[in-house]
Image (cartoon, rainbow, N blue to C red; front, side, top):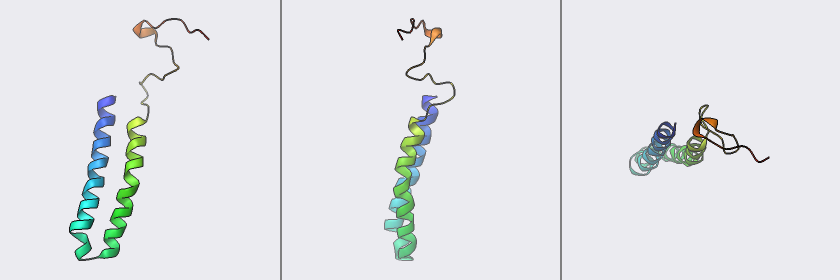
Length: 77
């Protein structure tokens, strides 16, 4: 659960970093518009990575769900 989301987050952020560094160090020498496009794509990745990292999986408990498996108490509501 948590490890899978964490790996996805770090993979997305690694792609983001590689796009920024590649655009600034290499691609700008051949094509400035392509480097700008790479930076725009890289700028869109961090919000997507945060959404991916915080998305609840099908087997993750939610904050307001009662979890009887762990000995959770009665709901007060």
